[in-house]
Structure formats: C-alpha cells, structure tokens
Amino acid sequence: MSWFHFDPASFSLSFLSVLFESVPFLLLGALISGLIEVFVPARWMTQLLPRRAGVAVAVSGLLGVVFPMCECGVVPVIRRLMKKGLPVSCAVTYLLASPVVNPIVAVSTFAAFRGGTPGPWIVTVYRLIFSYGIAVLVGLVVTRLKVEQFIAPRVLETLPGRSTRRTAGFRVGSLAGTPVPALAAAPFSGEATESGSGGADALAALDVLEEGLSPSLGKRLVAALQRGTNDFLDVAVFVVIGAALASVFNTAVDQAKIIAPLATNPWAGVPALMLLAFVVAVCSTSDAFIAATFTGFSFPARLAFLVFGPVFDLKLVFLYSLVFRRRFVLALGLGLFVLIALVCIRLSSV
Image 1 (cartoon, rainbow, N blue to C red):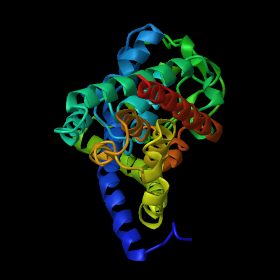
Image 2: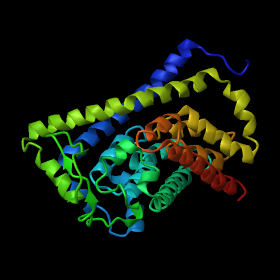
Image 3: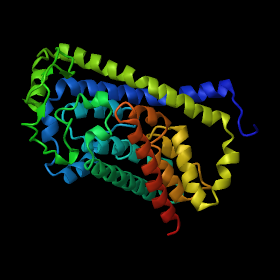
Image 4: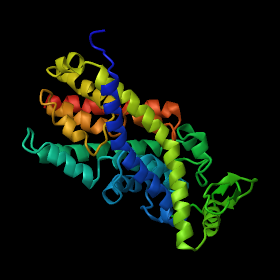
C-alpha cells in the first residue's frame, strides 16, 4: 500500500512522545482524585453549585478556570467527584469543558496563532466559547437522562442515591432523604459497598465513610497517595492503547495523500481535520501548535480540530468507557462530531 508504511523507529518515537506528553497530566489528575477522596467532605459537593440544575450545569463548565485539567487527567477526577455527590450532569459538563476552558489552554492557543491569520485573539475566543457551549449543551441533555442509561454499572454502584433518580431532579444541598442501600466502609477506602437494604440517607452514609479517616495529616496524605495510585493504574493502560493507535496513524499513514487534498473543499476540510484530531490524540495543552501549521485549511476547519480533539479522540474512547456505557460513548462521539462539524461548516459559508 503506497499510503501505508510502518517504521518501528518512527512509531517508537511518536508513541513515547504522546505517552510522555499524556502521563504527567494523567498522574496529576490521579493525585488530585486521591486528595479529593480523602480531604473533601461529601457535603461540599452538594453545596458547591447553585440549586437550579441549569445554572449548576452552566457554572460547572467554568470550573476548569479554577481547576484546570487536560483530557488525560480529568476522568479519574470526575469519577471521584461523582462519588462525593457532584451531580452527574455537572460532572459531564466539567469533563468536556475543562480540557479547553482553562487558562493554560487559552495561553497556549494564543501563543500558537500569534502572527497568523486570523489573529490569536479571534482563535482563542472562538475556541473557548465554542467548547464551553458544547459542554453545557451536553450537560443539559444529560439532565434529562436516567443515570442507568449511560453510567457504567461499576461506577453507578458508587454514586450516592442515584440508582433510581433522574439527574434533572437533583437539588444541590438537599440529597437527604434519598433512599439508598446501607453502606459499609473500611478506613481510607472510600469505597461504598452494599451490605443490606434500607432507607439510609446518602449523605449521612458518606459522612460515616469519612469519619473512618484518621485525623493524622500524614496518614491522610498516605491514603490520598494510595487512592491516586489505584486510579492511575486503572486508567493508564487505556492511555497506552490510545497512544499506540494514534502513533500508528501519525507515522505509518501518508497524511499528505489523504488529508491535504481535502483542504480546498470546505465541506471536506472540516470533517477531515476532525478525524485527524481523533486519531492523533494530542493533548489539549499543545494541540494548537499543530492546528496552526494547517495553513492550507480554513479557520473553521482548524477550529473544528481544536474543539473536537480535546473532547473525543482515540485515547478518550477508552477512558470514557471507564465511566460511561459503551453505547453512550458512541452516541456522544457521533453527536459531538455532527454538531461541531455543522457549526464549523456553517462558519465556512459566512
């Protein structure tokens, strides 16, 4: 095949580059998840956001400004936040928004497009606003779904009082009275396991879990490190698989023969760069420097690359599967692809 040639040396270099770029952020996310598990009381999650579901979702899309995370490390963080009582719709919004709507990505995008056309301010503002809008829209859709429809069973079991409720029905700060199975816990574990049936209050049960933690700061730090290590090992294997697949495309496929001819067609250029963003799986903190090199493509096509890549790429397919059901991951990817493509194609005609 003239368009495919596998070179082990090039593959190794690309694979290690993607891996070394992703792992530090993944490790950071895992450590943050461990600190949340041990130091953040469950009731804080229910008092963090406004009481109205729509407003809470909108605010969740801005949490990346305060807690910036790239897509490589945010998955273990949102798993832990949901266990602590953060509404699922808010967690999904933060999951999709934080890889772009944060100061690190804003600065890197501005720097990458400085001196180019259009100007860096235009690219940065369009990227942040578009990404925020997409995340909030998905979060609002999720509020209309039952958690059983899209959350993976093993994650669903850990959610406080969510097994039979719609996410739209949450009242932040008022989860008391929600019937859930009785919970049992071991010190430092933070794991909720079913030990019987009854009408125990979800937050009260979580408070019991947290009372088992030692008041010693040193022991709490050790516990946080243990939980973070478990999360890191749980997620790292999927990052490795995604990095390997992305590296095969980066090094073995002749992209000039496949991608470049599409640049002159706006209807083909937008989906072409979105597919490229999916397979190359570059971290959101550095993907703008790649997008800036696609000077043959229109601005809307490059914008599609910058918006779609951080919310759905090869490695994220595997990472999302740790939290969501597979059919939801597929529906999410297709929905995001169609929505972002239509908006950017429309921008091409303006």
